[in-house]
Amino acid sequence: MKHRALLSLALACSVFSCQAADFQLRLIGSTALPTGTKFQGVEFGGISGLDRAADGSYFAISDDRGGERGTPRFYKLHLDYDASGFKAVTIDSQTTMKRPDGSAFPSNARTVDPESIRVAPNGNLYWSSEGNWNANPQLRYQPFVREMKTDGSFVREFNTPAMFNYVDNATTGGRNNKLFEALTVAPNGTVWTANEDALIQDGNLTSLTKGSTVRVTALNPLTGQSGAQYAYQLPPIPVDASPGAPFGPDNGLPELLALSDTRFLAVERAFASGVGNTIRLVLTDTTGATDVSGIASLNGANGVTPMSREVLLEMAIQYQGITLDNVEAISWGKTLDNGNRTLVLAVDNNFAANQSTQFMAFEVSAVPEPQSWALMLAGLLGVVARRRAPGRHRDAV
Image 1 (cartoon, rainbow, N blue to C red):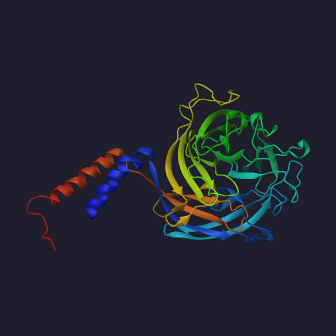
Image 2: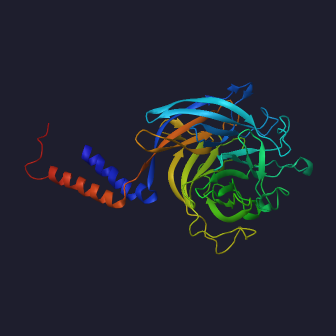
Image 3: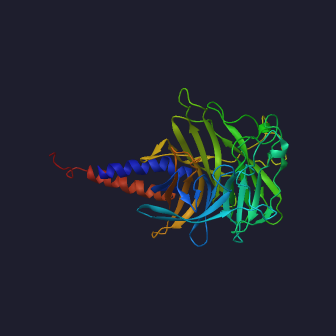
């Protein structure tokens, strides 16, 4: 039975995993902080971005817009886990982001919607905001990507394309709460951001029958200007909401993590009220994709080759005994004692009593090259053949 199981595993990997990626993931474990947890008198939660610092701690940004639980802020966390499991999460510090004039964002009004945070090569922090749509232009705040110091003070704002700005939330521009969720930094220093779901001019939002197209945009860290832009195709929503649910299902691209200058790990998150969350980790690459920065509308555009898309891991509703939640953050984690790297996912609990701030850790290990699988298969087949050779059968018991 042992050899038969190994043979089945080798065949399965040779047909599926090994063709999809050159690495594979093993769930190490998870832990969570309950909704209502407070730090320095302020409720902790809404974690929408996570990135590991040089000292091994993690920066985590809350999507508290102001006027909800407190002043828009980010945290420094310590994540305690090893190859055997996830032990604990400790909140070390809390810092408020500052506006260009040096003041904190207000705690009693929605003026920003923090979504992602990344450590810059110079030790500063990049962060993104979806802004806040309001029909009143005086209360409307545009999305942005900014750089700040680790004390929260403003450094600069990138010049993101005007196509992402809120206009009327109906005919063109950004859609309410569907903008700069994703942010990552490539090895060459390029900053990449992406909208969560389609711009109005790029077509409909994802549905149960059709996907949508979002734009992954490069930002030059030297000039602050935007550069190349590529189309990423979101698939249809995989699961419908329960009958009578208070709102319909959705799907989106909440985060990206750069693996190289062109290759990324994308987090796709779908939610169906009354059913649960489906989380996909997807390998995607800009190589061979069309630069769409000069195309005003992707709705029906011809000759556009999107970024490649290969599902590495799909976790639907439950995964290895863990109920999936609203995953919005991904970061590289520590290196284990065996030399393998790790990934950490984090959940935005929406400050809801029926959710929690969940963290999941995965071990990243290399998948053997095709020739290695061929040798393994040959060896296993040889073992099976020898076991079935005349004179080598065991008597039945």
